[in-house]
Structures are given as C-alpha cells and as structure tokens.
Amino acid sequence: MNREKRHHPHGESIILAGIYAENHAWSQRDEILAQRLGVPRIMEMPEKGTALVVSETGLSLLSIDERGMAMRVRVDFTTGKWRQRIASVRGERLIRAMGRKAGPATTIIDATGGLGRDSFLLAAAGFHVRVVERNPVLAALLADGLLRAGESRVTRKISARITLTCGDACHYLQQQNHRADIVYLDPLFPEQKKSARVKKELQVIRKIADKDDDPAPLFAVARTAAAARVVVKRPQHGPWLDNRPPSYSVSGKTVRFDIYLVES
Image (cartoon, rainbow, N blue to C red; front, side):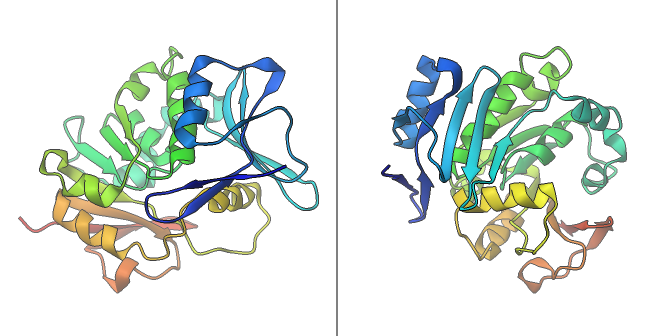
C-alpha cells in the first residue's frame, strides 16, 4: 500500500497511510479533514505504519511498528483521571509557574500546543488560553478532543476558554494583535530510552511531529511577545533553553518550569 506524504510549509513531511473509519464511522467532517491533510481514505489498516482512525468515540492516531505492536494516541479530557486533575488544578506546578498575580483576566499563548494537555490544565485554572500548533495532525487530534470536551457538562466551560490555531507560532506571536501576558513553551524533550507508556506515546508523536531541533528562534520571539513572562517546560535535569538562565524555576520530580520575567 502506498503511503502519502503530507508536506509541511517548513519542509518537513508527515507520513500517514491515510484515514481509516472503524465501523463505517465516517462523516462529512472527516471528509473535510482528509482533504485538508491531503491524505486518502483507506479501507483497512496497514500491517505497519501510521494512520488516523475515525470512530464513534472520536479521532485517534494509530501507529503499528515492525513487530506488529500498536500504539494509539487520542485526546480525551473527559475521563475520570482528568476530572481528578481538574479538581486539584491549583496544586499543579504548571499553574504556580504562571505567577501569583495571574488570574482569570490573564491571557496565555501556548505556542507549542501539541496534544493540549497543559493548555487544558491552564484553562481549568481559569485562564484564557490561545493554543498554536503548527503540525496539522496534532492540531486535528486536539481539535477533536476539545470538541468532545465542549459537549460534556463537566468540561464545557473549560473548553470554551481555549482557542486553537494551526499555524507557525513565530508568525503568530509577531502579530501585534496576538500579544499576551504569558507565552508558554514546551519544546520536545531529548529522546530517552524508556519503555513507560507515556514515553511510547511520545515516540508516536515524534514520528509525525516536525523535526525542529532548535527551539531558540521561537524562544527569542516569545520573549518579545510576552507582556509579563515566558514559561518554559524542561526536563528536571536538562539544560536551560538556549543556555539562558531563568529568573527562577518551579521544579518537580521529572520536569521543571523555567520562568523568564519580562522587563517593562
């Protein structure tokens, strides 16, 4: 079976076999998504490779490796685990990293949206979050998750505080009308050889994510676009981004948040 390559404006390619509909769960919205991504509708899953899967429970990304092992990535903010995190969201280090003065009127731009998990926590804490994700596949997964979150009584108001843009974050931040109080960055961590489920999911994301090994240009733009601070998520023992020391950090067991205060 031939695989289609979706070329990104930055020159990277996202390799997908296509979009597969489970139990004939195909809609006009899925047809529009296939056209936008430039990938075909496939009638069966390939023996190995990566494809988007449409089902009655939403959109997911399914990757099958050379050994036939399958890994599915899906965005779902309505599970019991998420309800627990929402209930205790003020205790999250991510929220503390936004600063004591941050409140409902604070606007945050998540310039490396990914699957939107940090953005959702920020919105659950009351912030208005503008998410930018340049990878169209990740953006589609996140859009699907936010759509379903908007249909749930528990997460409807949280989802309403999030807006999603699929595009280049540098260009987005350079537009004056998109200035925000805080810019949040979560560039992909260096690869680690671990077998935990979260790490396996990260491996799937790496397969379709843009191979941008230098987040420094985005970091530089973020420092000029933020009105109050730039918050950068890093591995706990990893180097500072662009070797620039932060104003201070909020640390946990595996990650830390480096805070760069903007001089007024």
